[in-house]
Image (cartoon, rainbow, N blue to C red; front, top):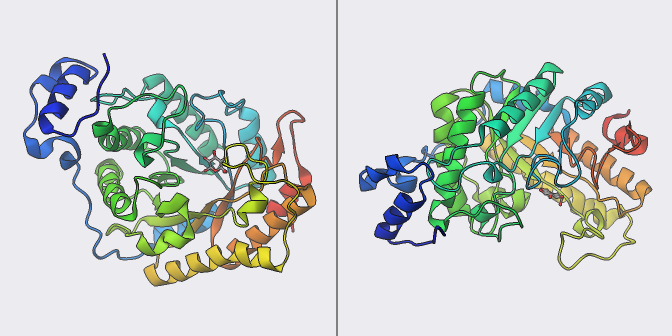
Length: 371
Ligand code: BGC
């Protein structure tokens, strides 16, 4: 049966009864005040206190990191050609990275209707990966990635179809389950609420949803450090409209792919595909690269929350010498402003590691980690 979208309460309730996943419990429909998002009130965000010493220490300890991209945020692990392998965990730690950001498409591993159960096999897989990373002494940033419906974007082929009235509530209930599963982990595990909110996640919508999600997380993880980034794909330009909740164990996060015409040349997921042959980094490009970092520094000074640069990188269609220059400039620009960072990404199209050769691409690795 198709779980049709609908906004009238009666339709929501009948949809619920028909599509609730487990049948029975939804028949005793809760009072209106607990239907949908109303059951997940937002944390206040009128007076964010700035970061605690613990959040600041964690932000620093994340240090130089790398994204395990194109693995767990693919529609299913392996669908984009990469799985999380012990080899990658060992290689990241041995190279000297201090943290790994784990992008995860949870939305393809949870039931579409209430109670939105996360697949226990997938949850166990994630727990084992997180444990392996923590066991290597790495900090871990565990996020939610590519829940396209949350941004109002079309689903990818093979994505779980979800009734539009349930999409945001499902986001919160997935976080409830993730937070409960990982609540006993070391404080070297950090949660990041959502990668690159955009589209339907206007500043107002995202400030509201993030405050609800943090309240959900805080029920089981009262102290864990959580990252929240601004809208417009975690653009530093949107930091001004980001309202941090009234909570001190928080870090702000941005992404920086400027100059985009260089970093994303030839990338097939950008439309139209940008022309190749762009090198980096002349003075104008350096100014483009630096401007978002300067904005983030200003925001961090004003709000007293630290910044983690969660993604930057240059796609393989650029020449290697330019990619190395870009990478080193971004690293230095971030570090000189006190930001920890995660390079995008380990072993795919931006990869610092060549999975076929089982070796790092040393010019990129040195740009990230060398003297
Ligand atoms: C997206 C990736 C993309 C990367 C660079 C990430 O946030 O999730 O799919 O490759 O940005 O564009």
